[in-house]
Amino acid sequence: MLANFWLSFREGLEAALVIGIILTQIVKMEKPHMKKMVYIGASAGLLFSLIGGSITFNEAKEMEGMAEEVFEGVMMLVAAGLIAFFILWLHKSSNISQSIQSQVANRSTGAGILILSFLSVFREGMELAVFNMTQISQHASAVAGGSILGIAGAVLVAYLLFKTTLKLNLQFVFKALGILLIVLGGEMFAEGLEKLIGGEAVEITGLIIFIIPSLYIFLKQDIQRIFQRKQVGKSM
Image 1 (cartoon, helix red, strand yellow):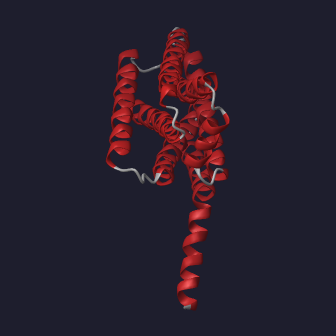
Image 2 (cartoon, rainbow, N blue to C red):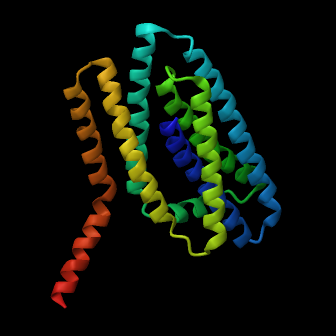
Image 3 (cartoon, rainbow, N blue to C red):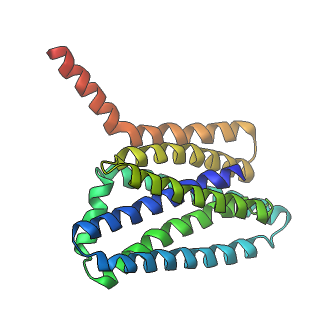
């Protein structure tokens, strides 16, 4: 349940922050009437991802024995792959907030804003569904409970962040979420290998192979900036 909570919290917080940025940008563009399109799109994205996730999870729960083990192992590797893709995407995106604001500006129509809001929530929802597929051996109520608490907590934190400051450093928030996701992704990758291949050595190796390169790629620019500042400080 704890793993489900953190995964749901991370996915939910990212979706909530994106929706918050969209709403903020709409206000800046002086188009407050489009807020309802954001709410409709976000609600539809949540609804469709819940339906899709529930159907696929219930179908997967029918598996037993070796088929269940293999399925969970494969889904763990798929989930780790999604996390690796996110890390690469975030590494290439120097400013997440600015990127989202640009998308809002390019989709200034009501339909465009609705679609952007829908996809922002639906994508995170389906990613969470894939993560939940890694735990079909767990009781459905525990998975659902962890997911609901995680999403509720994410929405609350996002609301407080936007309400308490107008100069929110979203880049820092996404960095923190990324590091959390790398740790969870490493655990999934290692457990997936262990289920499919077996052996404690394989699990430990998988954990190292995933986490160390991911952290290096994810934090490479930050590390370079720190060294540059130190060099500038020494030269002065």
